[in-house]
Length: 309
Image 1 (tube, rainbow, N blue to C red):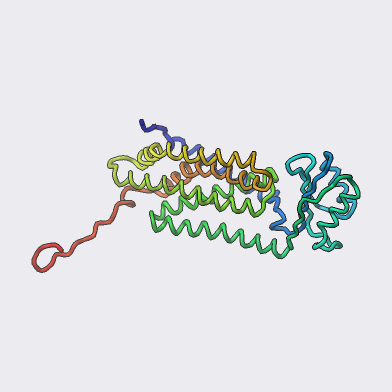
Image 2 (cartoon, rainbow, N blue to C red):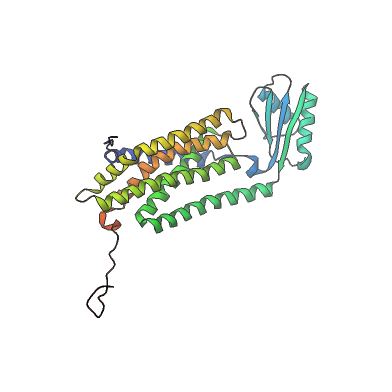
């Protein structure tokens, strides 16, 4: 099979501009709008109801507000007869029985209402999950940096962490932009994105290191270009097969894992891009050279007989 000859690094400046724009937009959305945190993090009550007839979500929201359940969110859950209601803690309502109160309110307003499930998460638990989730992401990035530092060099370590941070911020930016619910399943997807992107980055880094040691009298740009072309087929096949599975989960897996599949689908696309452009760009920005990757020769001491041990 003929190795492609795409000039990846020739377009690296455009990639830098594109990545910077993505990061700025993502951080801007996170700062201005923030994440639409699910009840896992904020605390509150989630009630899933089934109706015999189709109902209007806005009308359901109005009924909730009229009965004192304010600042809640109402969305369809699969069809126009399935409603998912999320209500944050209310000052004058017993939180442990709020799910039953919401169900009784809906029974009084509509005929043929059935309770599918009702869950309550306390605010203390939500705050703890928020802190633990942030620490988990930070710990993952630190461990990745140490691992790459030991296995490769500091240039590869910095490049890998920058690429992973790029992926996480962009995925969060998409959730902030479209106001998608961020819950524990999405947090799990972010950790999975870190693992997937790390695997891709290690494959790219390993081939770059191998070619730097093997190829002489070539510039770093040429060596990195050749390395990226050599692993392009493997990268695309892995990414596409993973993406096909995630898209199947996204469209046929149901509402429960939709956020997970959505976050991971975005992460796979962004992670494939970052392993090629962000991580490799960082190597050039940090002035990687062949001398940085050569295996140091161990000097052998001559023994008294004049021969080497």
